[in-house]
Length: 215
Image 1 (tube, one colour):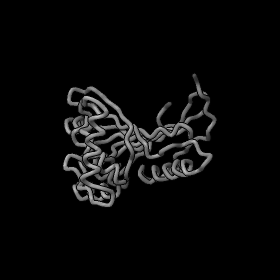
Image 2 (cartoon, rainbow, N blue to C red):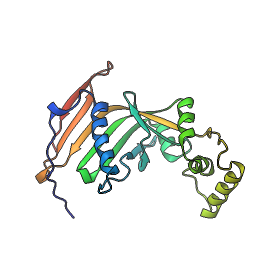
Image 3 (tube, helix red, strand yellow):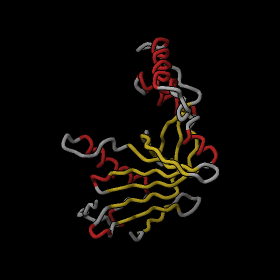
């Protein structure tokens, strides 16, 4: 199984001065591809979040990006989940955006910290009603006896908070913001000579250096 890439390359001169702006350009292109009925990108905000626990044991899972700006990249989760427990013990994380149909990847490495409660509540209010109930029904990453147990918990919550009634944001649920230390933009090229341009934070002042990496 081998795919041959024939995409055009990427050049330093065409890249933005900072990685968040450049990410916005690529993300907009991925989102446009997803919006096209003939497009092949599904959920361009889906990213693989990799964490490691206090002993260095890694784990990965796909999570949806829910916001980004100059402060970092935001996602939300249950604070009792494995990923949250990992982050609380070891804040170093990696985010991977696998836009393979466009022959592109973006890899963010940095540190994660919880968002403020106000930000969490604002986002929670924007979720579909069923997703709000699901955040209460699931004790994420915990062992359960059966699917019936989960469905029963959801049904009880649906009866308590019918459609149209405000669901309170769970205290055990909230956001993380990943502050980037490096952001790599990967473009597939022929003969496995891919282009890799990586922004690396220069110093505490927040400046960025753009480096080309060998494939």
